[in-house]
Each structure stands twice: as C-alpha cells, then as structure tokens.
Image 1 (cartoon, one colour):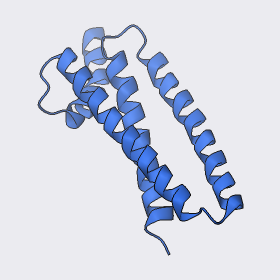
Image 2 (cartoon, rainbow, N blue to C red):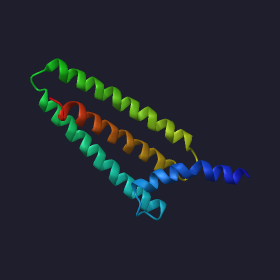
Image 3 (cartoon, rainbow, N blue to C red):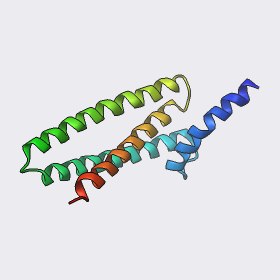
Length: 121
C-alpha cells in the first residue's frame, strides 16, 4: 500500500517533467532536455530584461525599480526551487523537479516582462 501511495504522489511530477520533454525516454535524456529548456528560458529572460531596460533608458527611477524587482525575483526563484529540491531529496526525480521549477518560474517572469513592459504603451 505504501508503494502505491509513493507512486501516486510521484505521478503529477513525472507528468509535469514529461510534458516539458515528451520525446525523452530516460532520466538522462530528460535531464538534457530540461537543461536545454532552462537555458532557452534564461536566454529569453536576459533578452527581455535588456529590452525592458532599453525601453526605460530615459527613466532612471524606473530602471532602478526594475533592477530591484529582478533581484527580488531571483532571490524568490532560488528559494522556491530550493524548497522543491528539498521536497524531492534523495529521489531520482530531484534534479528533474528542481530544473522544472526554474523553467516554470523563468517562463512566468518572461510573460510578465513581455506583457507588462514590452507590449504595453
């Protein structure tokens, strides 16, 4: 019975990781795929931040606030994904879930930067 409970608790996490990398069949392939997706999300985030800063070049107060917000977001992301890391400690899925957390939060931040700063006004 305990084994079934453990398996059912892992199911949503496995589905989430599999949704990001549907063609991956092994843990190694999944890790490689997720790391690639994280790299792309981080690159997009850096690009969106650069474009946002460029948009507000003439507004030092806005630039300072954007930078402070980014620093706060980075601290939040780090702590949030560390909690995921601890939650899955000792499991083979630990790294998959931690990277999935970083991808999800980077995508959310990208959407916010795009919708709030880059597509408005």
